[in-house]
Length: 259
View 1 (cartoon, one colour):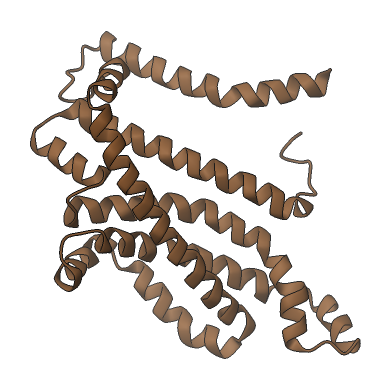
View 2: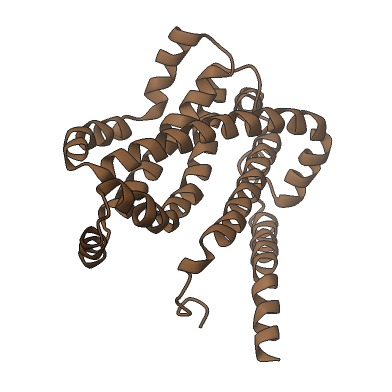
């Protein structure tokens, strides 16, 4: 019974905390009489979500596919480069400074270059989502491969395993928890990148909708677009967690977090 009660409380916790957060937000806006042009209450945001539901749905669909396209590129590129960095010290030493330097460049500063290269359209948001989300994947995959236990490596070498065998049979499975951990970070970053690209270099998407709402001083619509982005991000994060549990459930050995 105690386990059932705990599982039920864990299932209800996200809803209770979310409802409590928006309730406090509503009460605070009404108690301090904050103008909707400064901080609209959740009731006004909900009204804007319903009023502009067609526009929000249309632009959210475009943001979703542009984010997934950039995220897919980041996963493929991040896996290949992360495996190369984790398997070769030479590649690691030569490539890491370039990766760190590239990641340190604000991606907002890169968007104008993408506009010059590709013009206004879907290319800039997709590439921005890719550029802002591949770095965590590279780092985590490389870390998983580079931290194989020396004892396991020695045993496999003694049994005649080559470096390729060690990487394929031990390194890659061992790096999967790191990989899925990075995906949960990368998918949220991909949304940030696509919105940045849409805000500056696209005629569609939630970022473009936010730019037009900001120009019209339509603050409720601006917050409604943010809520739409948050919902999309939570859904994609939840899907990633479900896939992670199915693929790497064997790695969840500790009960510390559940205690």
